[in-house]
Length: 210
Image (tube, rainbow, N blue to C red):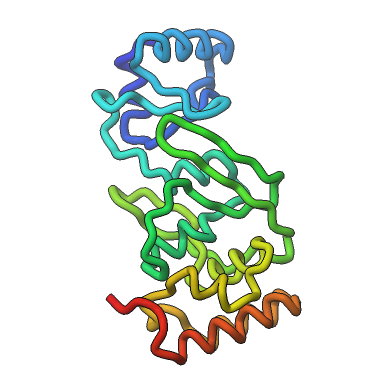
């Protein structure tokens, strides 16, 4: 395969896998060619078997949220990243935080740091397919599920101090009825305590309004 052929095949993809290129060809030969292009700076290795074209050759942005789904299929963006994306917390989140039914893992890539937290199959819900820039899509937790995922996976999260330190804002984006519905699905005393405190904050004048 020539590099021009590679651009035609994957130039409009944010990332691609070697297996995508191997149809009808030699997988080993493709891997060898990709390795050479990585050394030449034309291709960037994101993770095992996952690559993206270097910026001069790529015809689309490489959205970290989209890459998260490529790194682990059984995952969705949640926790601090989803809360920041929805505008529920004001802080910039340096890592892309996700939950997965796979094993927990932190993956460093040239684009971003990805943190995957494990969650059981019975709690793998409450996310939506969301369109990002340039028609790229990914799965992102709803504001309510992102809050509860964070509370569920963080020690000491069922305390008013922890919840106040989140500096929740844009309260109108959190649907209390949905929050309570999701809380019942968790069947967790800890989540019930956290939800009760979240409701107290939402009904007060605390937090940051922008």
